[in-house]
Each structure stands twice: as C-alpha cells, then as structure tokens.
Length: 378
Image (tube, rainbow, N blue to C red; front, side):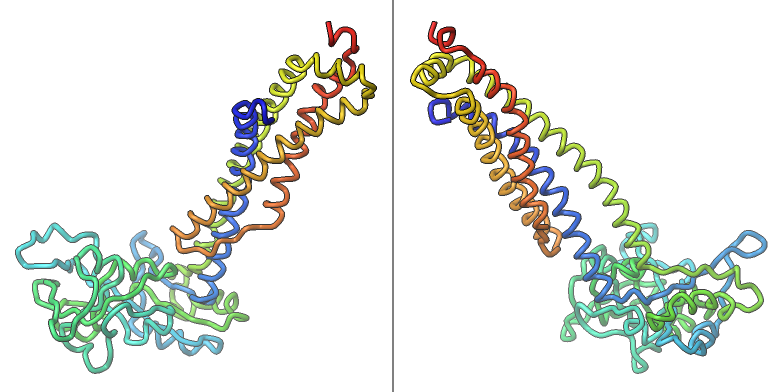
C-alpha cells in the first residue's frame, strides 16, 4: 500500500463511495423521520379538517353557517374554527398592478381563534381579534407575504394592500404551517369585514377541529353528520398529519432504491479491490517466492494478502463513513432537520467494507499461497 499509494487510493475510493452512499441513504431518512416526528409533536396529530364535499348534483356541497357551533357540541372536541373563501376577490400589492396578477394568493375569512386551533404562530404583528375584525385589516400567510414582498409588520409605518378593490392594512404575518398549507398561501380577513366589504355569504369552506388525541378517530367518524346532518357525504373529513406521513412513506420507497444503488457501488468497489490484489500477486511473485524459500508457510502468505485486502477495504469503509456523516450533517442542516446518525449504519459501513475486502481478497490470497517457490523466483 505504501509503494503503490495511488492504486491503493483508487481501489479504496470505490469502497468509500459505496459505504458513503449507504450511510447517507440510511441517515438522511432517519433525520427526515425525526424531523417529521418533531413537527407532528409540535403541531399535534389531533387536527382534523372538514371541507366541502360533492353534492348530489356533482358540484361543491355548501357547509352551513353554524358549522363551528355544531362541531363544538361534540364532547372530545377541544376547539374549532373556520375559514371561508371570499369569491372573486383578489389581493395585489398596489392598485397599479393588473387584476389578473393575483400571485396565487387566495382571500379567506378567518375566525379569531383560528391560530389556537391549528397551532399556528405569528411571525410579526398581531392576528385578527374582536377589536379589529370589523375593519379592513388583513393577516398574511407566510407564502402570501413572500409573494407580495412583505416580510414583517411595522406599526409605525403601516403597510397596505389592494384587496377586493379596497385598501386593507396588513396587521400580521404568519409563520409557516405544514399542517395547513392553504393558510400559508392566503390573506385572512375578519368575517364581519368580509360580509360588509367583500360580499362574503357567511358559509365556511373549511372547518378546523382540534380533538382529544384518544378520541380523534371517533370525532372523525361523526364529524360529517354533525356539520351537515342532512347530507353527511357532502362533508370531506381529513387528518392533515396523515398527508405528512404519506410523504414519509414515499421517501422510504426512494430510500430503498438508493440503498440498492449504494450496494451496487459497494460491489463495484469490491471488484476493484479484487482486481488490485490479483495484480499485486502477479507483481510480487519474487517476494512471495523469497518468503516461501525462507520458510514462510502457505497459511502465512495467504494471511498476508488477505490482511492487505481487508485493510484496504477497511480504510475505504472508514473514509466512506466519514463522507456519509459529512453529507448527512450538511443536508440535514440545510433542511433544518436534526442530524440523526444510526449507529448500525456507521458500524455496519465499516464491517461491510471489511467483509467485502475479505471476499475480494480470498482468491488472490489463495493464488499467492499456492505459488511454488521455484516458479515464483524464476
């Protein structure tokens, strides 16, 4: 390994790439799963949403105006709040912008206790309250604020937006909410102001329900019939946390694919080590013959070449584990995840690389051991 350093490095590189890929494939999903677990724990897996389902005519079913009040009668419900879509209402940064340029931001009415129900937080300013919901004020979701070029609220310098043909004052900007992405892309106004200024009919389009964790399934089962007793099938009930879990399952599928690719890279690295050891046996025939002539047994010759193969692969495995740890830590940091490094991935990477080295070096070692001293010295 000292006399042929470049060959040793290139041989170990194949092992290192395979081990690094396997470590990263195991560690990155573990970091993602931990981030998802932390996110669900913070936001709560006990949130349900009831939206407009299909009516008998095939259109959107209308939720009753008293839907929230009906939902709150369910015993295990801890809180409920609703949003409603203001029809044909757009929001723009200025009245000079074309009405067609909506930036994909919808205008929703919101109850004053919406944040408490969905576990949302303010990034800046304040939320809708009993004191301001009757006035032309608006709260922007995180994505909506970004698209409108507003990143914070300064009470000393009020920011206004052109909403539904009128000027509304921005009083708050929300943090991101993974369990309610529709809120992130919306501008929220008070229900009373929407009725008076925007032609809102008072019917909610989404009802958010926070239930006791032990009773989520039971609440989900009766939610449609409670909101709309006449047409329970006209209410679509979902659990947002299940969507995040489904995304995690999709990531696991891709992880299995990349794990297989890492195994193939490790196999290719093992072939490279085997090739290096075969060439080494051919190049060192005189050394082998000299050692045999001085009394070395076949077992000692076999052990020498096998040890070199295992050492070469083991060093590649250590390098691969190091690379995998750096890749995982860097990626997790860029995504805002905790860096989770499964011990079985780290220890397994080195162990597998040593095993690959042993398998790859077995034939060259036996070939070197079988070489007769006279033939080797010829």
